[in-house]
Picture (cartoon, rainbow, N blue to C red):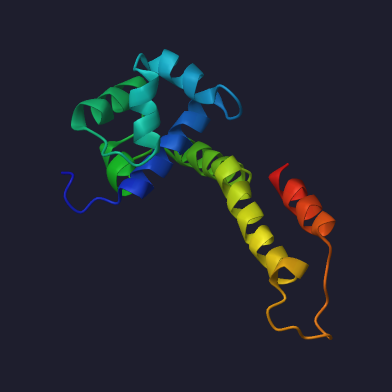
Length: 149
């Protein structure tokens, strides 16, 4: 069953299921693993795109009535109640918002901002173009620090 699966998409659906079950925010994974009685490290690996084993998928289907193997593995919602479909779609919106504010995303933004700032800093005026705007190092540090918040 693991052949040809999009493990990233499966991991995202697991995050959606977790959010539907216990909400988001700090400690959500811990609350979820306590509820379904699995090890934190095992669940964390699944949310990071490790393959979802059949035994774990069955455990989730039994723990959350209405959730199907088709949805977990393939994203198919047919066969699920319209109420559950709606709840999962709402949870998906919340997960999308959380992913947009994740530390890895902001680190990536900070990195891009630093690269952009460095292009216009006195540290990198390889063209010696007098028309090219130069900014002091305070600008670079301030902008990178702001992006990490």
